[in-house]
Length: 304
Image (cartoon, rainbow, N blue to C red; front, side):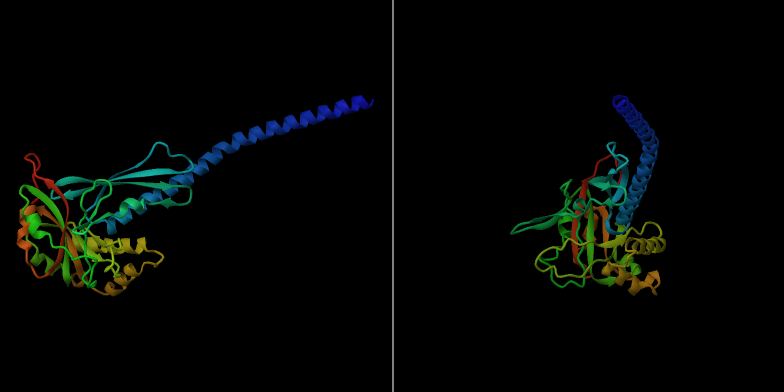
């Protein structure tokens, strides 16, 4: 009788275990699609936020750099993945490749590829310049008029670039003091393109070495006033927590000004290399740093 009872108990346990296994399988089969859908939802939201962050940074802190495409790579999953941002520069109608960003995202946050956003630095006893880490192309550098001493002499490369025949180029022109857009337009030759306005950057000690800090500005495009309004909105979104002292100082100091009263620290210009000759020895220019260049070919006509 004891043996029969033990067998019955074992049989009941097996049935109970089988029920638990079947129930677990059914629950898992039900929860898997829910889990996948939930995970995919969070990953998609995080991916979208990251894309918007990349475009926002490009709008305000990447001089004359445009985003050509953003692609979520094929190995991305419900848990996250990578976004490849392809970028280029428009040099007076000539498209020049620029570094590609590989940024990652998870369920709740994204990580911008800051390593490629910061230029590389070449420094020797006789030469210093910044360059794009992937393309190895020299970067055009801006210099703040309120920083009295930099680690190296502020360059003025206008005479060198104007001697290059059959080339187009971009040049970051830093002013000796801030100017309004109307004042700038009177000083810049009409055969050069104003493609970016340098509005603000941190004022720090750079006498011992480059700080590699962001500069803020925007493309004036066809409507500078409208572009400026968009720039202000983008700055507020970018620094929603109001932790960026440079951005907050710029916003506060210009909130009651009309656009034609706002002062500009420098401009990014593009054009034929020999057209920059007209800017040589101009006293309103503190420095001029050459960036990307391209050789003119018969089948692509420069914009100017």
